[in-house]
Structure formats: C-alpha cells, structure tokens
Image (cartoon, rainbow, N blue to C red; front, side, top):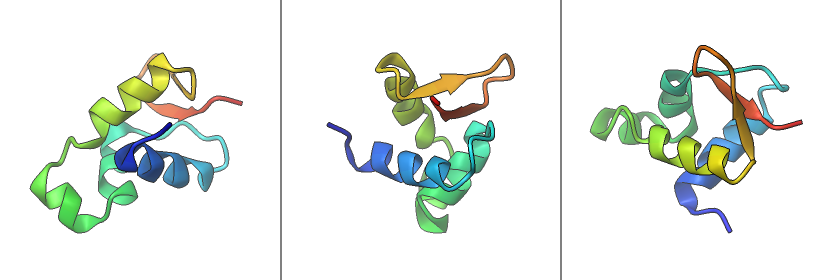
Length: 68
C-alpha cells in the first residue's frame, strides 16, 4: 500500500513515459509548489521506499522511473 507521497510520485512518473527523472524534478512537480517550498527534498524518502519495494528503478545518476 502506498502512502500519499508515494502516490504523488507514482502519478507523476506514470505521465513521464518511462523516462528517467531527477529527484529534484519529482519533488518540484509531483507534490505541487507549496509542498516543494516547505520541503524541497520531500520526495527522496518516498522514492527510496518505492525502489526498495521494486516499484521504481534508479540509473547511475540517481534519476528514477517506474519499473517497466
């Protein structure tokens, strides 16, 4: 089961067509500008949890995408 932050990340990446996206871009676009202003790195923990569960994959640069 995904929490609210994980759902935000999932929905954003689902619309990106399988491209690798930086954590900064995910933080900026997935949660909205208010969430980004309050905590610019909010997505990092959600992304790492999703990688551990096999939902996302990371490339060598640390960018992520939904696992195909």
